[in-house]
Length: 76
Image (cartoon, rainbow, N blue to C red):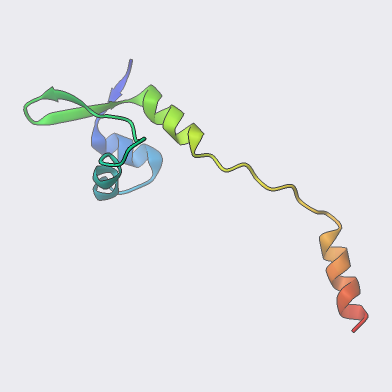
């Protein structure tokens, strides 16, 4: 288990540390581990799984759409 500190976690997911702090209060976000009196860290594998669960699958691209739009404009 590799642990990453909040600064590195925020950098990895592309948000500010303030946003990370806000998100860690939400249900579903990976729980931080207390390492000492003044330090916490996240399990990097949990962060990776959380990121993967939020991935949005791309919509199927309709390759004929641009041709239809052009035909519609021509018929006006």
